[in-house]
Amino acid sequence: MTASPVLHSERQRELLDMLSVAAVADRSGPVSLRQFAIRAGVSEPTLRHFFKDRQGVVIAILHHFARQAEAWLARSAEAGGNLEDSVKGYLDLALQGFDNSLFVQAHAFALVESIHDPVVGRAYLDIVVEPSLKAIEARLGPGIDPGGQSPDRVRHSALALYSTMLFAILHQRLLHGEEARPLDMSGFFADLVTLFGTGLAAKA
Image 1 (spheres, one colour):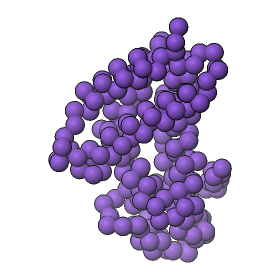
Image 2 (cartoon, rainbow, N blue to C red):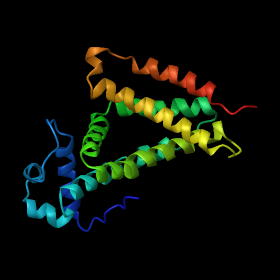
Image 3 (cartoon, one colour):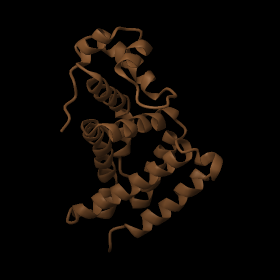
C-alpha cells in the first residue's frame, strides 16, 4: 500500500498546488524534475528537499489529486434506494467528471506516468483506482448482494462500471473522440443504467 506523505508545512502544500498544475498542463511527454521546478518557480534542490526525487514528486501529486477528490469519493459510496438509483447516481457524478477537465487530465497524467514507472503505477492503483472501486462497491453492494454472500460479484460489477465509465470519458476527451466520433454521454450513461440496473440486481 502506498502511504500518504505527511505534509510538513504550508510551503509544501503551496508547492503541490503549483506542481499539480504543471502535471496536467499540455505536454508532449513526462515532465522532468527540472521542468517541474521551473513551472513551480523553485529550484531542483527545493523539490528534492520536500519530495526526495522526481518519483516522489509524482506520487505526492497523486496524493494531492486524491485529497482534492475526497468529497467526490464520499458521494460515490452513497447507495441509492435501489440498484438502478445507485447506478444512475454514480453516473450522474461521472458526468460531472466528464465536464471537469482536471478529472480527465489527472487520470491522463497518472496513466502516462504509470506506463513509465511501475512504482508510480502501483501508487496510482493504491491512491486513486482502488479507493474509487471500493466506493463503487459500497454503493452497489446493497442492490447486488444485500446478504453479503457474493462479494466477488459486487467487485466485478464495480470494476465493470468504473472501467466502462472511465474509458468512455478518456475516449471522448483524451483521445479526441469528441471530434472523431462524438458520443452522447447522457444517452450512453442512460443505457448503462438500464444495463447495470437490471442485469446485476439481486435475484429475488
